[in-house]
Length: 154
Image 1 (cartoon, rainbow, N blue to C red):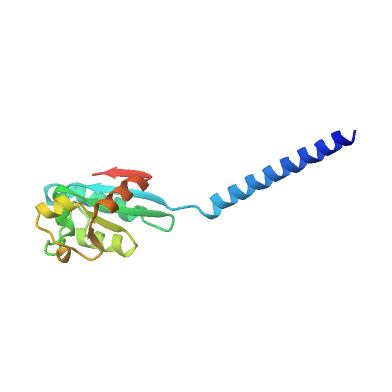
Image 2 (cartoon, rainbow, N blue to C red):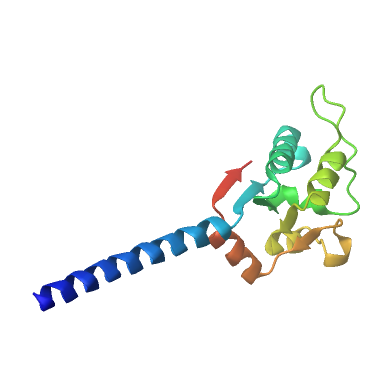
Protein backbone atom coordinates (compact mmCIF):
# COMPACT_ATOMS: atom_id res chain seq x y z
CA UNK A 1 0.00 0.00 0.00
CA UNK A 2 2.82 2.35 0.91
CA UNK A 3 4.35 1.65 -2.55
CA UNK A 4 1.05 2.51 -4.25
CA UNK A 5 0.84 5.81 -2.36
CA UNK A 6 4.44 6.69 -3.25
CA UNK A 7 3.82 5.79 -6.92
CA UNK A 8 0.67 7.92 -6.93
CA UNK A 9 2.50 10.88 -5.39
CA UNK A 10 5.33 10.48 -7.89
CA UNK A 11 2.86 10.27 -10.78
CA UNK A 12 1.00 13.41 -9.64
CA UNK A 13 4.30 15.28 -9.12
CA UNK A 14 5.53 14.27 -12.59
CA UNK A 15 2.27 15.37 -14.23
CA UNK A 16 2.35 18.69 -12.38
CA UNK A 17 5.95 19.30 -13.46
CA UNK A 18 5.09 18.51 -17.09
CA UNK A 19 2.10 20.87 -16.98
CA UNK A 20 4.27 23.64 -15.49
CA UNK A 21 6.92 23.13 -18.19
CA UNK A 22 4.27 23.26 -20.92
CA UNK A 23 2.93 26.54 -19.50
CA UNK A 24 6.45 27.99 -19.31
CA UNK A 25 7.12 26.99 -22.93
CA UNK A 26 3.83 28.55 -24.08
CA UNK A 27 4.60 31.75 -22.16
CA UNK A 28 8.04 31.98 -23.78
CA UNK A 29 6.52 31.65 -27.25
CA UNK A 30 3.98 34.39 -26.55
CA UNK A 31 6.45 36.71 -24.81
CA UNK A 32 9.23 36.11 -27.32
CA UNK A 33 7.20 36.30 -30.52
CA UNK A 34 9.57 37.21 -33.27
CA UNK A 35 8.47 39.57 -35.97
CA UNK A 36 7.34 38.03 -39.24
CA UNK A 37 9.97 38.50 -41.93
CA UNK A 38 8.80 39.49 -45.41
CA UNK A 39 10.96 39.82 -48.50
CA UNK A 40 9.55 41.89 -51.33
CA UNK A 41 11.56 40.95 -54.42
CA UNK A 42 11.66 43.48 -57.25
CA UNK A 43 13.38 42.98 -60.62
CA UNK A 44 11.96 45.99 -62.47
CA UNK A 45 12.40 49.75 -62.48
CA UNK A 46 11.50 52.09 -65.32
CA UNK A 47 11.04 49.08 -67.61
CA UNK A 48 7.84 48.34 -65.64
CA UNK A 49 6.84 51.22 -63.34
CA UNK A 50 3.63 49.46 -62.36
CA UNK A 51 5.63 46.64 -60.72
CA UNK A 52 8.03 49.09 -59.09
CA UNK A 53 5.16 51.05 -57.54
CA UNK A 54 3.30 47.93 -56.43
CA UNK A 55 6.43 46.50 -54.77
CA UNK A 56 7.10 49.70 -52.83
CA UNK A 57 3.45 50.17 -51.88
CA UNK A 58 3.24 46.58 -50.64
CA UNK A 59 6.51 46.84 -48.70
CA UNK A 60 5.42 50.15 -47.14
CA UNK A 61 2.03 48.73 -46.18
CA UNK A 62 3.57 45.67 -44.48
CA UNK A 63 6.45 47.18 -42.51
CA UNK A 64 5.57 47.66 -38.87
CA UNK A 65 6.08 46.67 -35.25
CA UNK A 66 5.58 42.92 -35.67
CA UNK A 67 6.77 42.71 -39.28
CA UNK A 68 10.21 43.25 -40.79
CA UNK A 69 10.34 43.91 -44.51
CA UNK A 70 13.33 43.71 -46.83
CA UNK A 71 13.01 45.11 -50.32
CA UNK A 72 15.39 42.97 -52.37
CA UNK A 73 16.44 44.56 -55.65
CA UNK A 74 17.99 42.71 -58.56
CA UNK A 75 18.25 43.01 -62.37
CA UNK A 76 16.86 46.40 -63.49
CA UNK A 77 15.50 47.21 -60.02
CA UNK A 78 19.00 47.95 -58.69
CA UNK A 79 18.62 51.35 -60.38
CA UNK A 80 15.93 52.21 -57.81
CA UNK A 81 18.63 52.29 -55.13
CA UNK A 82 21.08 54.29 -57.22
CA UNK A 83 21.52 57.80 -55.84
CA UNK A 84 21.74 59.49 -59.24
CA UNK A 85 18.45 58.04 -60.54
CA UNK A 86 15.45 60.36 -60.57
CA UNK A 87 12.62 58.90 -58.48
CA UNK A 88 10.27 61.82 -59.03
CA UNK A 89 8.12 59.71 -61.33
CA UNK A 90 4.50 58.73 -60.88
CA UNK A 91 2.36 55.95 -62.25
CA UNK A 92 -1.36 55.92 -62.91
CA UNK A 93 -3.55 58.59 -61.37
CA UNK A 94 -1.71 58.76 -58.03
CA UNK A 95 0.35 61.90 -57.40
CA UNK A 96 2.69 59.96 -55.07
CA UNK A 97 6.18 59.58 -56.51
CA UNK A 98 8.42 56.56 -56.34
CA UNK A 99 10.82 58.67 -54.28
CA UNK A 100 8.13 59.43 -51.70
CA UNK A 101 7.28 55.74 -51.37
CA UNK A 102 10.96 54.80 -51.01
CA UNK A 103 11.51 57.44 -48.31
CA UNK A 104 8.36 56.50 -46.39
CA UNK A 105 9.26 52.79 -46.47
CA UNK A 106 12.84 53.28 -45.29
CA UNK A 107 11.91 55.82 -42.60
CA UNK A 108 9.50 53.25 -41.12
CA UNK A 109 12.41 50.83 -40.78
CA UNK A 110 12.20 49.01 -44.09
CA UNK A 111 15.47 47.55 -45.31
CA UNK A 112 16.73 47.70 -48.90
CA UNK A 113 19.22 45.08 -50.07
CA UNK A 114 20.79 45.13 -53.52
CA UNK A 115 21.99 42.06 -55.40
CA UNK A 116 25.79 42.37 -55.41
CA UNK A 117 26.19 40.78 -58.85
CA UNK A 118 23.57 43.10 -60.37
CA UNK A 119 25.06 46.16 -58.65
CA UNK A 120 28.46 45.29 -60.09
CA UNK A 121 26.98 44.84 -63.56
CA UNK A 122 25.21 48.21 -63.30
CA UNK A 123 28.41 49.82 -61.95
CA UNK A 124 26.75 50.82 -58.68
CA UNK A 125 29.22 51.21 -55.83
CA UNK A 126 28.33 51.47 -52.12
CA UNK A 127 28.94 55.23 -52.20
CA UNK A 128 26.43 55.58 -55.05
CA UNK A 129 23.44 54.10 -53.24
CA UNK A 130 20.49 55.89 -51.71
CA UNK A 131 20.18 56.23 -47.94
CA UNK A 132 19.25 52.93 -46.27
CA UNK A 133 20.19 50.85 -49.33
CA UNK A 134 22.99 48.31 -48.97
CA UNK A 135 24.75 46.13 -51.48
CA UNK A 136 24.24 42.73 -49.88
CA UNK A 137 26.94 40.28 -48.92
CA UNK A 138 26.50 36.56 -49.46
CA UNK A 139 25.92 36.11 -45.71
CA UNK A 140 23.21 38.80 -45.71
CA UNK A 141 21.50 37.16 -48.67
CA UNK A 142 21.68 33.71 -47.11
CA UNK A 143 20.22 35.02 -43.86
CA UNK A 144 17.49 36.99 -45.65
CA UNK A 145 16.30 33.97 -47.64
CA UNK A 146 16.56 31.47 -44.79
CA UNK A 147 14.71 33.69 -42.30
CA UNK A 148 11.98 34.86 -44.71
CA UNK A 149 8.51 33.80 -43.64
CA UNK A 150 6.99 35.08 -46.86
CA UNK A 151 8.36 36.25 -50.22
CA UNK A 152 6.39 38.53 -52.53
CA UNK A 153 7.70 38.77 -56.08
CA UNK A 154 7.28 41.68 -58.48
